[in-house]
Image (cartoon, rainbow, N blue to C red; front, side, top):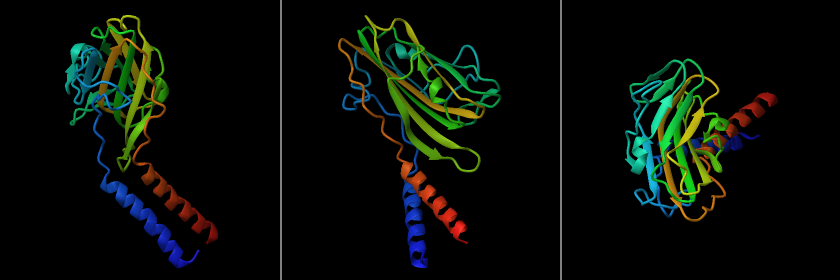
Length: 239
């Protein structure tokens, strides 16, 4: 590879990284809006509930954590409980689990939902050890669709800040009842729960499940880092 070509490859990678880093601001949690196919209703609509957590106060066990970052309807009575070993609250209000795998339960008060079809949307922000996607269940049911919507490298040994979004489309004759239980966790220690938001809505007709969850905006950054790594490996092999 000529020196000019080497310089071009490196410059392109650095430009991609710099451009992404400049906009590397954690994505806010999405509000429920009727125009967003992942929801289909607006926050505060009759027949909807909302529960949002941003700063936790109870590291483990009862009485758990009530929503502190907003709620609507019966969602104000939802409770998040941590069952992980060695859990504590960080100075920023995150719920950090250091002694083993994270294990969270959320009792969602769904008593305001009375329709025959219910959609539940969960948004979860974590740091450090990532959530185990297979652990994410609602009433023992895996999401209809879900995935990672944002990734922000934390640097050092901190892993990454990862945002997940999951959707459940359920058939619920006259509503899902008094509550639903959301479960999620990790396969190892050092998961920090940053934020959680749950929105739900019931109606008389079935929802159309979205075909995809948008990919993280940081994928170009990860691709650029991969290109630099590949370039370095080729250079070493030719040396």
